[in-house]
Length: 65
Image 1 (cartoon, rainbow, N blue to C red):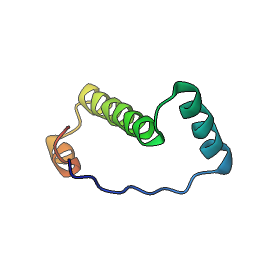
Image 2 (image 1 turned 30 degrees about the vertical axis):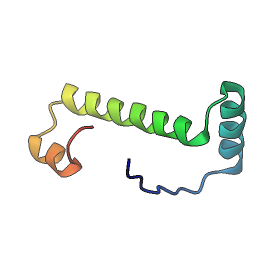
Image 3 (image 1 turned 90 degrees about the vertical axis):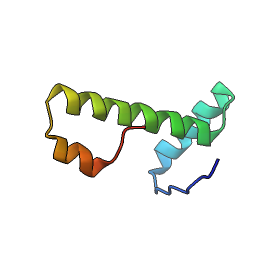
């Protein structure tokens, strides 16, 4: 699949926490971050649905994955 790079500067403490967590879980950092982003976006979708956000706003956010 085609991939795109997403870059973010994080506080050292958060970066270290992620490093420790992926080490314990035995998964890649990419997989961990990808799953975290999917979960966050799913939560946003649920909030938008629950609060009946106008379709115009959802359209600007793009299609749900």
